[in-house]
Each structure stands twice: as C-alpha cells, then as structure tokens.
Length: 329
Image (cartoon, rainbow, N blue to C red; front, side):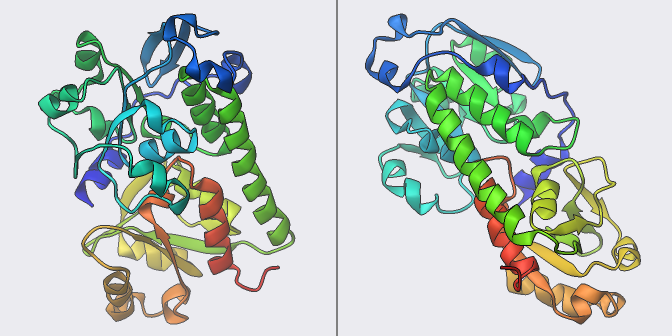
C-alpha cells in the first residue's frame, strides 16, 4: 500500500517519549461523566513527536486517522468521544466492531480538510505521519490554529528501536489525554500478559532467522530494526536478518536477502497484492531457490495492521510465534 509505505519511509523526526511514571495521575473512569471543566488532572501537558500540547480538558470530539489510531481509542472505551474515523487497512478487531459501527466514517482514505473540520473535532489522532500532510491542509500546526489539538503515534517519529516500552508510553499518554489513565493501565497489563505468555511458551527455543517481505520486485521492501515489526519478530522467537538497518522499513537488494539466508519469510498482508501472489514471486525467482526459507517453503503471514504500534502487539506476537515455532508449547 503506497500510503503506508510512504508514511513509514518518512520516519525521521525525533520521538519525545515521556517516562511511564511521568504520565501517571489524572482522573479515574468516573470522571467521564463529569463536565470537562471539572475533570481532575487537567491541564495536562504532553510533548509528542516534537509538538508540545496543553490539554485544558479531555477531548470530547476526537477523530482517528488510520487503523491503529482508531483501535486504540476504541480499546480505551472512547467511542462516545469519537466524532469520526478514517483510513482502515482491515476490518477492526471483532472485540471493537460493535463500538466501531457507531462511529461515523469520514472517508475511505484520508478525509479532505473540509470534511475533517466539518466533523467539528477538538482532537485528531494520526497513526502515520501522512495523516498530517501539510500539502493536504492537515498539518498539526494548521489544525492547532483551527482549534484542533493533535497527536501522532510515536512509532512514526521514533529515532530508536520501538518496543514494549514505547507501547506503554503511547497507551499511557493517550489514556492520560482523555482523562482515563486507569483504562490505559489495564490495557497495558493485558498486552504485557499476552507477551509474557509468548515468552514463557518459547523459553529455550532457538531463534530462527526471519526476513519480512512487505512488497517489491526489483528490490525487497522489508522491516528494518527501528519499528515494532522488529520487536514482534524477536518476541515471536525470531531474529530479523535486517535488524541492522536503522529504519522501521527500507528497500534492500535480493542479493542481500540471499546472503543472509533467512529460515522463515514473514509476509505482510495488505493492499492489492495478495499473499499468494507474494509467495509466487518468491518461489519462482531463480535467484532465491537456495534461500532456506524459500527452499523449504517456510512462510508466515501477518496483517500490516498488526505490524504497527497499537493494540494488536500482544496478539501479533502470539500469532507470529505460533507460525515461526509451531511445535512450541
């Protein structure tokens, strides 16, 4: 998907991540029903991807752009605070479908500025930096001038490897912004429980060499060492053969793939090219015939929506581990 690739290639800004302890305090769930001006723990100031924002009260009309942004708001029980959603790559997780069906869909992809502002949002949460495209009039500074506060998922501005610590920060700061820190703590605990179960199941298992095939024919677009995709491979009992690439995503040559001899290929499933078409490309390229993963037809599949910093991290680690190490109990 061109939009996701372009967004993920553009991860260059510094991530300003607050420690988990600094994000505590605030209201409990009972504050949801209180008038905004009476919400405890506000004003709240947060630095996010180079933008410092002061929230005098929790947002009441939020718009989520991109799958993981939408699902994180729904996971925090904030459907009643959502004025809209846009640009999903897949169906929302079944656990959130009922709530999602009550949220207005503003556009199949990114909404035009007029449509976005027409939803009368007081907060926009973007999953990829392309959500705040200045050329389209959706830049964060411009929205702030229009009275709309913003947040960008921190994976899109990370300058260091992204892992569970960054997921905790993302959930903590988002929950704190909405005045529901206890919900954030509960969601973090659920994610960590899933991840710990995977670690326990794989204890003593020898890591396998993994190559992520996102897309590409002349070259391979793959997961580097900076994004959550690299962490998912590690959690699932693998070792990313391109972990040394200091980007979340990057193009590499097929010669490099051959040299690094991956044991397993993880295919990202999204867009107009099917998983079967991607497998066919790998299996019919004579240059790859001796790559162990291709030779032994060792493929795993992960939806792109599960390979980003969001509520699917624990589930994705589990699903990937079961494919990479099917015999682990």
